[in-house]
Image (cartoon, rainbow, N blue to C red; front, side, top):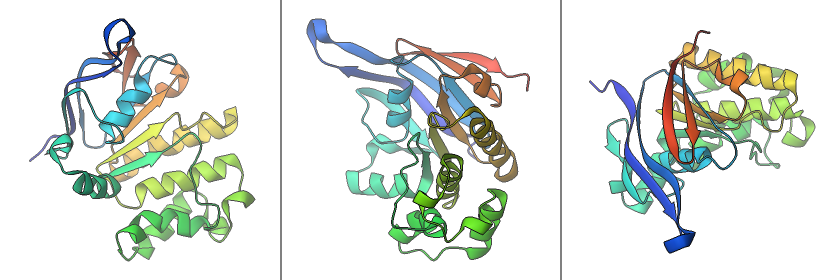
Length: 229
């Protein structure tokens, strides 16, 4: 039985050469158990977005390993990795990234349709209810507030029941009230569905909602331990 859903081993990412060389990730290693809500804090340029992109298989590492659900993602051929990423990793972005021509329900179920899978409508309806979107299921993104759009993005990330959800500054485009609601929702989803979440944020107050906090600076990741939430 795999205890850790995520294993990051000696991960390095460099850009440029010689004097222009930048070490964006400097021998980063950590592990995450199933159902953990992890926050990574750090200033802009600290390397946290690079870490999220590499762990989420959106970018390649210079060296090191990332194992998700026991699978070495960098050993996979590109086509297989694309399918694995779609089926096993959910993404929540600062800019929502919804499809404007699709309504709420269609945006949420879109990742399943890409793999020609029939949505479990019982689960979709449950997500809509938990996210407070039942009355908005037929609305287009342009008819929603920023907070509602981010809730749609959370539903889209959850619909495949992924091994891991990557949240990249999920409150970056929201006001304080909606930010608090989104953080509370992520915390609730982690507890309700034993959903593993890796969130990066510059807001240390938001990080306190997580189970564990890491701090990133100059490509180096430091485990700050368990929060006292």
